Image 1 (spheres, rainbow, N blue to C red):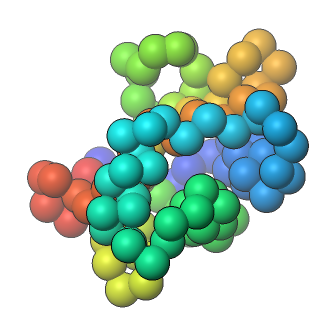
Image 2: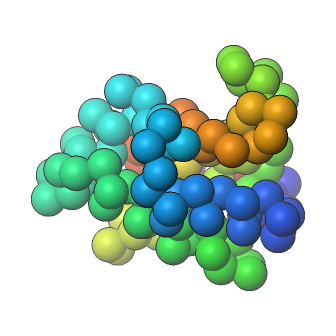
Length: 115
């Protein structure tokens, strides 16, 4: 069952997503392809980053931790609405200094509209 995503994790991820610093965000190729299939008008990576940042900036953002990702890090999965469609997202905060964000998934929910 989803719970509130921890505020410190959300704030760190949002700051990195919005910061646009080179090498601090990795959007996996498959995540970008699936995002573009869901939102053909959102061709650019910054549009995905902005949508994720907008959701994760909310105090009521809910999700679940994921513990089996490579590379290891603090990873959460969640479902949110963007442009009237539900999106399944999976994002990790990585490196010992927690300075890199990896977007693993960005697609329509495949197992219903809840986690």
